[in-house]
Image (tube, rainbow over the protein chains, first blue to last red):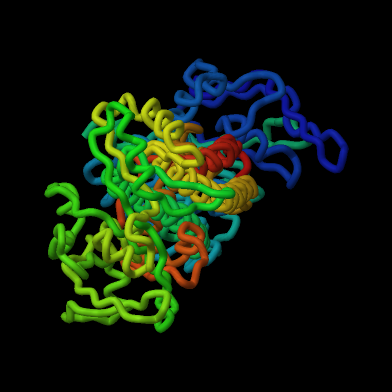
Length: 223
Length: 393
């Protein structure tokens, strides 16, 4: 199994009230899965994604990747997994405002050193998400939707095995949204494993390898 | 290239890029820091230059200087006192001297007049002159002038001039030499002439002088011989070269210490400001750290990034501050701190300060300015680096 969540539990305190965002979640994700998790706001989708990606720690339970509890390892090991194995796409664009779009794309590569052809690869990805003409612009010069497309392109710069995406088509118009979904499907066909949390039921339709789960009050339900 | 070196270069590149992109905020820190270093360095350089000048001059100070006191005030010594030292063994030479002050009313300046018997030919003494020679034995009216006296008297190329005796009759003198500027601290206002001419200028008795300059054959015996001289001439004040050196050192140490204490307070204020600024790093900064960690940067990488940013700021500010301080001493004679070191006397003739900087001064300044700044940014850097990656989610 590529990813295995075992009895994951996470509780937050909001307005002095405990909120159970993940309630004993058990989930297996196989290599090349295309998992879509649907759910209302506050259902715990983003928390689950953060737990899988090791961005936050669970109160109890663990996440295994390739059978290893990587998120309890050293800072160096965790960083390597984040950098080489996982591509993140979050609800907001999460770009560095002081870097150009092209530089933002190359940023994950600074961890391991730029390789020959890195710049061309960044340009190709920008073309694939339809924003090549903004290569030398700064994030502040782009619309929210354009920034989102840059963040999506950046998630693929290291050719990750797993892509974790939180509302990846949230700010996009219908045409762009379709282009991005097609882009995800192409990547999926090339072997990338996707875990996507969204309100968008379109992402949960029309793909042959699709697996859809519902999330409610921190619990997962098969659809 | 080695992967780890490439990684460090990438972090450094990102840090410098980030500094440049936030240039407005960083430029303010840079300017304030440069200003603080400029003040500290100016003070240190000024102190070092003056101490060096004093050291150069003290080489020529006699081993022992003897003066006569009466009712706690200095009075002239007579030839009779000179004879009393015949019984003190170990003295290699005794030279009588007249030391006094001449007020130049037209320029409103006080000059120091020293009358001494002609010195023996000495390369060291000759090196103190920029031009000419010392008054020779029997050469009447010959004077060596300090550079400020030369300027004040407006002699130009002329050699002859005159000064007034107490009864306002004139003494004719002529310039035979000028002191080096490197020892201006003590010679800027000096007029060196023969014992007879000084005695004539101050209208002193024919066998009177203000002090005796004693040289001792064995330097280790100086304290013993000083004690014997004090016994031989009752009521005398006996000062050794070592005591004079310590006095200069104490004067400059006290003044530079006092000034440095004031300036270090401003440095401390800046460091606290830097610490405070670092502690309150913005939401935007937090988000940036979160994104970097999400993309695979480690806690150590973020700390290195902040360290490189601080180091770049500190190094540039240090370079600018030191350069400005050097220019301040070289081109403006340390105008900001001149009064602190040299007193506020309006009668003192002006003179140029010769800059003197040592590597250890630069290291000391770096240790007292850049290092505290770097230390002050370590904790904020650590706090920034432990921001959880999910803070951006």
